[in-house]
Image (cartoon, rainbow, N blue to C red; front, side, top):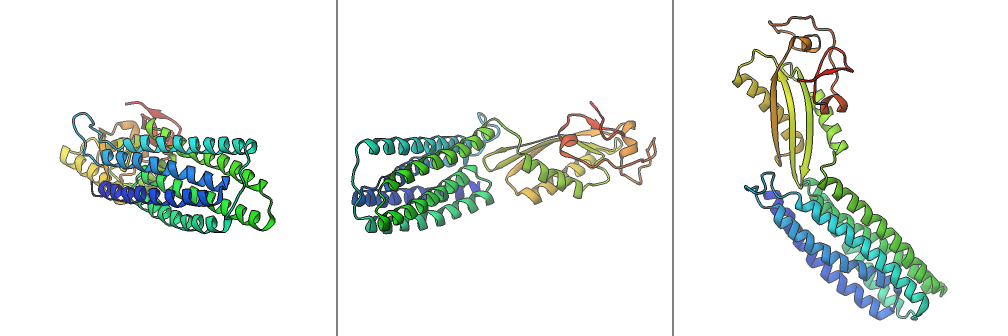
Length: 335
């Protein structure tokens, strides 16, 4: 819960900052009448709305699990990120709409120098705040904070593009570039909104995180213990910052309950040391069967019925399979 409270505090600062930056950008638009600056201001409205949505989602995610939510409330972060992605796409569509309208009703640009100074300041502030958000989000495994940070940095890049374009307009007087920049930024914003939306929907649907699973595979192979005859049916799910790990662990059949539990504890500690304290793990233990002897790496086993032949390297395919491994690396036996 400590990381959840920290996430909430960061989001509070980001939401307040979004309001200040919006005021600065809308002031720049009033000064210049630049359509490109208006696109920046419109995106800041999305920042504010997304900030409040993120704030609420992190407040919900920070709640401990209860009877109605036995896996906690972490999925609220995915909902928040989905809402933010949708809002970003909407902002991009509004920018394109405003640009098309401006082709019909032309409004002259003025006082570009003053407007440029204001939005340049917002770009710097946005980038620093976004980097802070992303760093904290990765450390605390918060998708909502990472989405907010990515949004702020996308806002920075779009602002820098607008600044570059407006500088060209200022010196060349090619005012049609204002509309071209706005159209380009609108499409760029829609694309980034889609990426955030896609990632959040993957979390809501419990889509497998292949990068996370590969890290788990490498970790288990590097620290494999002799009594871990086999691991299979491995599943990893993230609910906000909380990681859930399920698997079946095959141990020598003659271990008593306490000895088998010691092996489970060793597995739990290994994963906890790698991925942090914000995780819970459910392990089903199986006793080994004779067909597992040829692949069992326990050299001092007194109950061995078949000689050891070769060690099967654990891979993503054979770890997620719901079947025990046997002597043929490509085969598995369901038990």
